[in-house]
Image 1: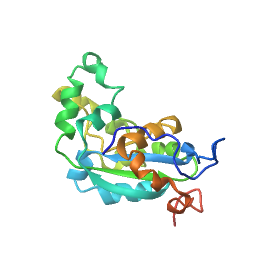
Image 2 (image 1 turned 45 degrees about the vertical axis):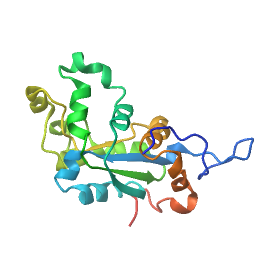
Image 3 (image 1 turned 90 degrees about the horizontal axis):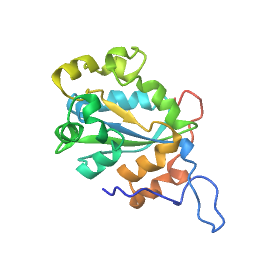
Length: 194
C-alpha cells in the first residue's frame, strides 16, 4: 500500500480551474481497526456502530507496512520520553505482521461524527455509549504499568483536516476511484443508514 497522500482526485465535490474534481474531505473519514480489535473478533460489531454515523464505502483487511504505521502515528514518534516507553518499538510490536481493517466512511461531517462515537483514548474513561467504552478491555493505567501503549481498538481521522492525509496513508492515489459519488451516496438520515 502506498503512503503517498492523495491530492486532487476524481471525486465527489466541485472542480478546480483546470477541471480536476476535488474532494470535499469534510464528508469523509478513514477508520483503522487496530490489531487488538481484529484479534478479538470485534470487526463486525465495531463497524456496525460506525455505520450508524456514516456509510462505509470500502472495508479491507491489510497488513500495514512500518512506513504506513509510522506515517499514521508521526505525531507520537517523538514522545517516547514523555510517554515513558519506546513508541517506535511499541508500534512495531503492535502492528508488524498483524492484520488491521481499514474502512472508508462517507457522510455529512463524517470525521467528527465517527470521532464522537469512538470515545476517549483511555477505554476506562470512555462512556458505555461509545465504541471504546462498550468493547475495549484495556486502560491507560494498566498500559502505563506494563510499559506499553494502550489497546483501544480503533482510530479514526481526528478531524476533517487530516482525512486527506489518512486516505493517502491507507488507500493512496491508486484507490482514489473510491471517492466517486456513485461509491458514496450520502446517508438519508442524520443517524446513518436504516
